[in-house]
Image (cartoon, rainbow, N blue to C red; front, side):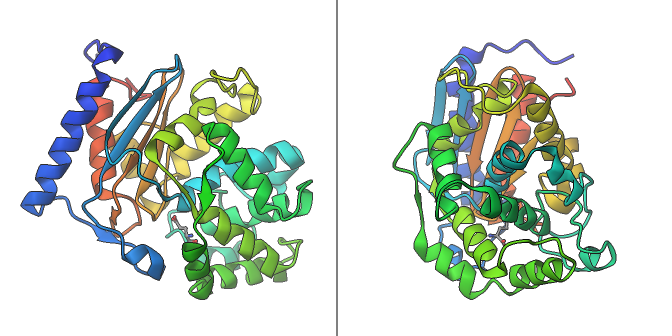
Length: 318
Ligand code: GLU
């Protein structure tokens, strides 16, 4: 049984976790490697560390670099999945599965022998199908505006922007994503022009936002699909539950099992070093530290979430 934890202590807990991360960096411990296959990301200081919690009751706690924007990358896939389900409904599941892939985020191998149907919406192939659904169904032009506006409203921050330098860098080096999209186009599972889908995908990954913004933006998933601050229903309760199930089983690529074992929360990582995690009914957490494990997940971010979940007794398995 987890120890009772007073949420008023969260601010102090976040500062303690951030201090421990700083000490680890100083000692040269718990280090990973900043993503360098997107050159614009390679320049980020690996010792950055931010963490923020937004509670369902409106309280927010932040520590260290929590207000500094970072590259959202694959965490955007949770927002696009939400948006695509609202736009096209459960029909989306005929084009993308719901199984962990057990393969790297940008793997091509499985896609070939599974005939262009990606395992889940949180690996790159699946996210490209989801983005394709948005490109086809969005009521605004260009479709990236629908995605960026959705995120801005969720974060209650109209100033959130797309980092064009990162988007261009992703495009210039996006050979694997182009290969995935073209392979799926050949199987008939990408409907719009491949170039439009890729441009939208690179732009959504290049959205820059802070831990404070991100934890606020994910709050609807902590509150059964309703944004508790605006009262707006974002998705049905059933969809919110299902999105979290996919985050738990697929949110960390081929390290999803290890993350569930260590942290025990539905969460999504991105190669910008961010991780967003949901504590159902209670809070949304965002952590950022750019140095990554071999599987592309923030090393210090995962350690921080492991400590937070243990100290606050908030794993979904507690
Ligand atoms: N934009 C990155 C890519 O497609 C996202 C990968 C990630 O964050 O895991 O390669």
